[in-house]
Image (cartoon, rainbow, N blue to C red; front, side, top):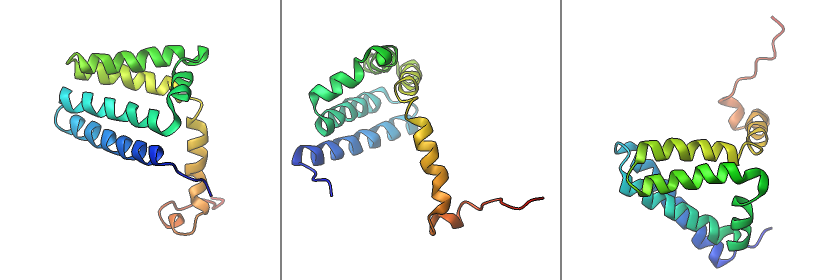
Length: 129
């Protein structure tokens, strides 16, 4: 079992509140204050969970520099009160940053068919018709 430190617990809470503010910022017609606050909380929570050094290493890797530039540029556009353009730029940067993670996440979601409770929601089409 993995031990979770107090800083990581705080980081999980900060990321949760960041996601909450991002969701309601989008639902309230791209409210720039809520989106900016959500972005700051999300990035602070990420720093609390994995540490400052690992966060900096993740964002400033050579192969992820373009994605980091778009993501952090989108955050700064949201903070400058251009929420729609900022969220589009930020979303593009997010896709560039996590594109290596998407196949693994898709594989996990497709393996959810084998979980008994979730298999009721994902009917398998194994018929030979």
